[in-house]
Amino acid sequence: MLLSLFVSFGMTIVKGKVSAAFRGPTSPSSIWLTGTIKTRQITMDGKKARFRVPNILTAIAHKLWSAFKDLLPIILVIAFFQVVVLRQPLPNMGEVAFGGLLVVLGLTLFIEGLEMGLFPIGENMAHALARKGSLFWLLTFAFSLGFSTTVAEPALIAVSAEAADIAAQGNLIAPGEDSLNSYALGLRLSVAFSVGVAILVGVLRILKGWPVHYLIIGGYVVVMLMTLVAPKEIVGIAYDAGGVTTSTVTVPLVAALGVGLATIIKGRSPLLDGFGLIAFASLLPMILSWDTD
Image (cartoon, rainbow, N blue to C red):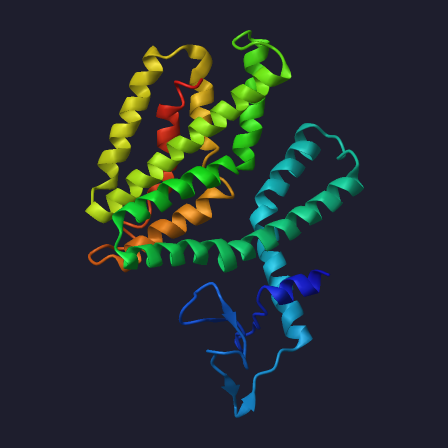
């Protein structure tokens, strides 16, 4: 099962021999293999390139090892405090080890999914809308993308539910399931609306060439001033509302949108102008979510 999953989303042959993943001329997210329409056939020393199971397994092992290295600092920190500070063995060692294996596997699949799916989709949409030449549809897409991805963020859903529980315990809202759900949904929608506006402003910045640091600094000055006058009960929630917006769903698509726009628009640099949308997505919810809280 694991082998079939990796084969399905890109059989990359390592050790410097042959790469079997080609990007199609009209769709960067497509993977074209030899014998398919609009593909290139690669030969090596006059022989047709063939996929071999050992090479595929090597590629899979390489990606799993890369994901494990990313998680290694977390493992070392937990092991240090468990063994040196607490001086206790890990409870349910078997379950912990199996859970860690699932995390490595999930992270590997997630990263591959980002590279093959979400990043190309964002760039393709940005290119297509920029070529269309309609500012209205481009800005509408930017707002809709920010809103829809934020509503679907698991981190925001969790924080909204927790905030509703704490607000009910502090008598800030009426107890009861309906009240909790209403508060959590209102927080999610207000944060999602804020991110949509933030992405819209970020796209305008790319189009107009506005310096990103002026907007970011000005926004955080507003946040600090609002912190001085806002009720202390909502300050922490507002700050966390900005942090949870930049998670697994929003970041890949938003980053790809910015880079894609900066790549296709004349006079813009992907490095200088393409990044910064994620910073807007974190900043504006801290300002606009005060009212809902």
